[in-house]
Every structure is written in C-alpha cells, then in structure tokens.
Length: 285
Image (cartoon, rainbow, N blue to C red; front, side):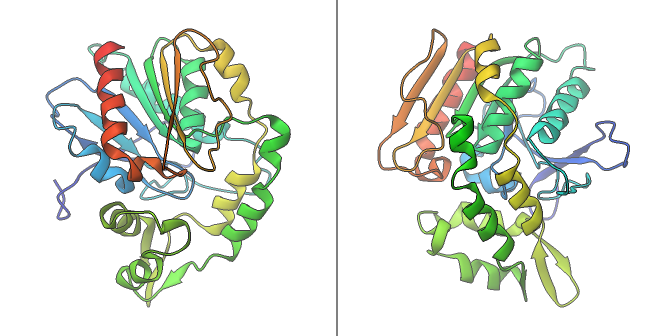
C-alpha cells in the first residue's frame, strides 16, 4: 500500500530496455486474478479507480500502457504504424501471469485503444483470455480509421503539456473540452498519474507525440481479430460519437449494446452499467 492508498505493482515483461509495466491492483489479493483493465489512449490506470473500487469482490489489475502513467517502457513514436506494440506488452503480461500454475484465464476489460488491444490479444492468446468487456473500442473500417485521426493527432501535439502543479492542471481541465462530461473523481485520478514531476512543476506522462502516434498508427486489423475470437465478448458503444461501428452482434457470443446519453467516455458517464457488465462477464466466462 502506498501513501496514496493504492496498491501499485510493476512487471518485468522481458523488454530489452529493462523498463517495466506499471499497474494498480484492486480487490482481494488472496483471490485469483479475475481481470485486467487496459485504458484509452492518453489516459492511465488510475483514471478508472472510481469505476473499479466498488467491485470489492473482484480481483483486477489496471495496467498503464507503454508511454503512459507510471510505466517505464520506452515510447518512441517515430516509425510507429499500429497498436501491436501495446498489444505485445499485454500478451507478454498475460504470459508472465501464466507462470503461476494456479492462474486462471482472465477477462480483459478495455476502453478505446485498450479495448482494441484487448481484442487483438484475445485472438492471439485464446487460452489466456476467457472473456472480453470492450468499452467503445476502436473498431472501424480501415478507411474510416484514417479519417479524422489527423485532427486528433494535431490536437495532441498542440496540447499544453506543462503546468505549475497538478492542481493547476485539474483546474484547467475541469468542465472543459473533452473533460466536460467527466465527474470529479476520474478527472482528479487522471491528473494524479497523468503527470510526472519535473523542475518547476509537472509535465504530461504521455507526451503529445506519443498520444498523436496512437491516433495515426492504424495498420492493425480488429476485424481479423473479431473473426478469430473464440471467447465471449460484451461491447458497450457510446450513444454519441462512438468509435465502434458495430451496431448489432456480428455473430453468436458477441453482444453489442449502445448506451444512450453517453459519449466515448462512457466508463465515467455510466459506471454502474459498466460494472454490471464486468460482473456478468466474470461470472459467466
């Protein structure tokens, strides 16, 4: 337990750099691990604390992707073409956790980029994944994935990265822009681990260049992964501006639900519904 009341863990996933994947642990540690949560581009594991903490009977690890939060793996945007780097990190973590002979297959919970990476990983490691909960994953035709992302990437590059303090960053974000629908708790948690200390203040843990590269690196194929998927999947779509074009189940075992009144940030706008779907996935998978 750390001073912030969170259980923090790091994992050596065999990266040549020696960097480690950071994670937050929720729920009873004596219980076998139930699920991993993978966050959206630009976010971090702590952003989802208010979503996960009420799941007091479930054991969940929320992971900081490479280039985000407190993970120390290198994040080099030059030449990046797809999300297989974060997916390979996830697969390496699944393999690392599989070293425990008592470790059961897991449910993967993923938001946005984290949902797509979870889908790709489940197709690659079906023996390690028993279910998916995908929160407005990025599942779009390849042509559409290229449209509009340039604007998001440009916004990430131009985004202010430095503040005199986390409190100053929180005040700048509260009720504005992409954060206008966010409750206070996830916004404060996003800021807490979304910045790192530097002389004279704080700076974004996920650099604008790295965030932008995630918007532009779209050569992975979620459709091929869907076709290969062998575990159940629950997909929750945003009611407005969804990044997932699936409006109904493409086949047996994949349930698609659109949540009216939500945006792409539905884990923070409809947490009770998301928790219900997580509980159902863990219980039935």
